[in-house]
Length: 386
Image 1 (tube, rainbow, N blue to C red):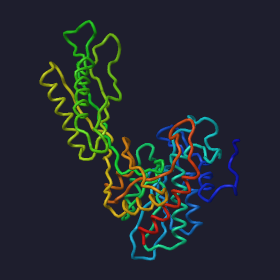
Image 2 (tube, rainbow, N blue to C red):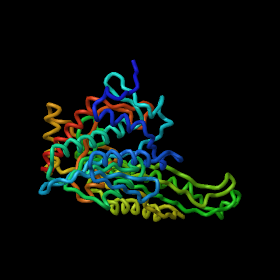
Image 3 (spheres, one colour):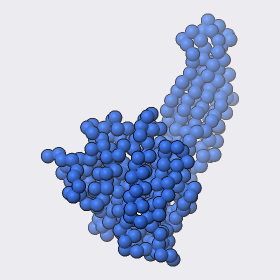
Image 4 (tube, rainbow, N blue to C red):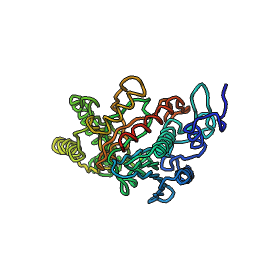
């Protein structure tokens, strides 16, 4: 039987999650016209203030706020940042009412329940419990905008706040992520010369010339497969988008290919860019009338946690205690905000709820995992900050 949530039948974290699911916080950079984070940020601000947290509203980009709640310690301890995103993907792709939290068979369903309003609820309640118990170092609860697109929220938070360590509470099936890949996007433009289709002596076919590059790109990917990272596997490269030409009766003056290069620890942007330049320069030498330009786009660093860091040791100890066994250690092919914290000098790792359906038509978390994560985060905060 399916029943909508009602006050009183859920734990504090469960009720908070239900309240968060009720609020549409779709990312407008993914879905034009989506609600954005303003309404959910206002809810969070009210909650933090009501619970006695110091509260900060950050909104460098209008309509895209992040909220940071801080429980100040008594002094002498280390500071810890909980980080989670408050934006979601499209509501339209959800099967049923995406903002009606439904409890069924020990799970809670709704858009954002898994990715990642469940994590937001867990870290807020954990910080509240740690605050009530008392702690020496500060606990910083960063509820950030825009992780689903460009992570402007975490970038803005890190301009204003730092910590001795951090935890990203993305869903992880109660497993621990200690490494993930990065990425960089490039636009490769192959230049030809426009001419009428009846005058081949005047034209240079940019699309045909681009074919040489696509073959070389495939060879480049095959070479990358031979150099695997010990936990993340090899870096990868693929062509994502291609465009060129004006009409059927003309030689195309240019062909643009957008490529994505997934990187592993030890691979830097300048090194990857030089590898592409080497390929293009070789084609320029070997292929008649081959002309090109290269522009780097958005890039994000790969991430690898230090297993010897204090936050790693403390987190793994408490997670092991809660689960009754050592957790599975994950290495992700996708990117997370862990890399931004690490680049800012904040040792961190990722741990979060069980469930499924991120970006899918049905999304859910197990309420049992919500309580486990809330309890574990409380214990980690009290241990690390004291």
